[in-house]
Length: 153
Image (cartoon, rainbow, N blue to C red; front, side, top):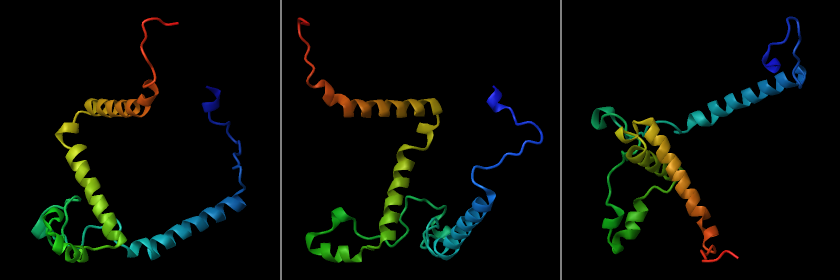
C-alpha cells in the first residue's frame, strides 16, 4: 500500500495551519484548561469520595452506598410526616447528582459486573440480543398492517 509508506528522507511535512497561528492558539487553550482546573474544578468535590465515609468504620468504599445519617424510608413515611421528611432532604444539584450516580453504580454492581458477566462471549451475545429485541420492539408497528391472505393477488 503506497499510501502507508513513510515519506522519503528530507521531505518537509508542513501542517495545513501555519505554526505561527496553531502553536499560540493551542498554548492558550492549554492555559485556559489549566486555569479552569486549578480555579474551578479543584475547588469542587467532583470525583472525590464522600466526606462522611470513614475507612475504619465503613471498610472499603462502595460507590452505591449512602454514607449519611439514615432516615425513614419514603414508603414508611406517614402522610402527616411528609412535609417534615421533605424538609430534611438535601435539595442541592450536587445531592441530586450524587443520588443519580449512586443508583448508576448500584445497577452496575447488580447487573453488569460479577461472575454473571465473567464470560465475554456471553456478555456480547446478551447485548446483541438486547439490541435486536429493542429494535424489533421499535419497528414492530410496521408489521401491524401486514395481513396474511390465502391468495396473493
